[in-house]
Length: 201
Length: 201
DNA sequence: CCCAGAAACTTGACACTGTCAAGAACGATG
DNA sequence: CATCGTTCTTGACAGTGTCAAGTTTCTGGG
Image 1 (cartoon, each protein chain N blue to C red):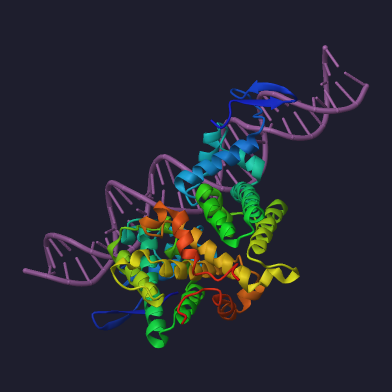
Image 2: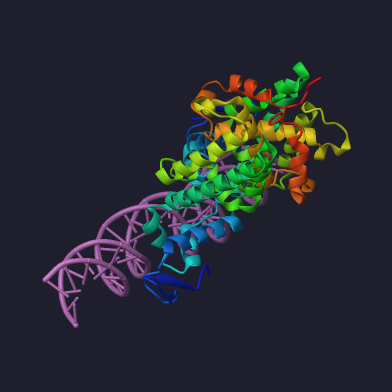
């Protein structure tokens, strides 16, 4: 179960056996993240998510329109937390290597979100919330890679940094790396990061 | 239609209205690749593949066991062609940048194969044919990145090169890059590749 | 030539999926 | 307390992968 009580207009109410759930939207997102974390995004079933949250099979569709709508919410949440993590790493250290490490760490700690975020065919790319969160992430990454100004969209240094870090994180979470890397990804990333010419001199 | 005639024991036979297809396995793989190219791997349906090849809905399962079996064949074929392309680029130029360019070009020209190859949850990773082809690709890439010897598996330079090139190719085919990059990926990769410290001095 | 037996494929069924329309239960507002 | 809109459920539908059983075709030995 995701939570045991819920607050409605100031009073705490037990969540069991109530018709109105309180925050079913939130619970469904959490259930979806859990399910994706266990079985991967391809095997995600709306009905399984509903069962996990203790509601009827059609409840998710009511809140999110369709399956892609639910994953859109997950992706948007992911991009928001992602932007937070990247911004924090940059303001704390001012070092791109730290931003890259935060990128990799996020992929590991939020694998379910991460696996959805960069698979655009799974969600509605035109959702405003999603686009805002995605833009935040992109801006944070560009800043970390030393790309500023209006033409930051097509900045070779930023694209190089993004490619490098994203490739590492993606291959890692997909299980394509040797065991030694999976055992200590932090160290591996530090060793591998030496070959990227960003944030130097 | 994938082909119009087929040769059986030396005689060419028209493929229509025959119970035995001749090379249905081949035709199903081609149909799957076509379908993935149009709608992406997540939306792939065995029944649609069967219809495309002009056979009954259960024919694919008979040849490949299950859906993952069909995708295993696609992935194995992909890794074989992939290894060919990387080996060719390396023997022709001896330059890692050329190997990287071949990596990116393969992802573009064989998007359907590529999208399956690096999504291990879609196929049977323990298939011998697949493992052999995958090992070939890995070896070719390591060689191109200047990693040799028995410990080539955990070689920081090779992992860095792989991460970089794979990240670029993956973000590109997934549609995460700005339009300017998608318009001329070759040039973009050349510009971006300057930030990788491999195959120098 | 013929006829088992194997191989290739089809047919039919099952449980499961996402989506939609209709209805029931509930909170809020008058 | 009555009404209204929201929240969620129920029931149905077409489509999916997979399995068992049946049918058609090829093969090889007499």
